[in-house]
Length: 157
Image 1 (cartoon, rainbow, N blue to C red):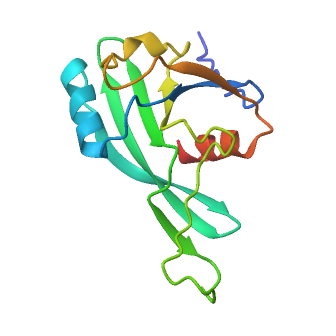
Image 2: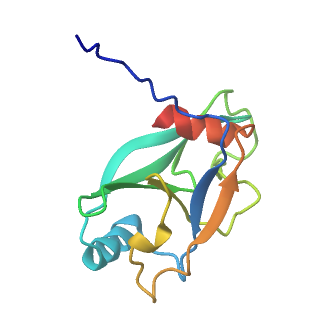
């Protein structure tokens, strides 16, 4: 009699993650950016649950858009580098009442507008078509497992 064997596929959390950095040619509202992206691609980006990060100032929310390409069986996630909402952890006892905290996920890359995460065995950034007049070429960026952002992205997934 044959016995069924169970194989467990372990997810290697020790491997670096390759993400794409997207820079816009000019600043546009989110709805215009994703209207153009959806017009040029066979898949559609939709708004998803916000990416929440914690910093010295409190919690910040970053816009997230997701798409799925059935032909290549690939998930795309675009996370805004710039926060749109901040909840301060301490009361605002400062002189400037209109003080707002602006947070970037990648603090060293303020010029990056979006982080592109491709869920596939081999991340291929060429599957997404970017309008020439909207975005520069996608720059690959390696995240090491010891970085906090790496852990946050794995937790978010």
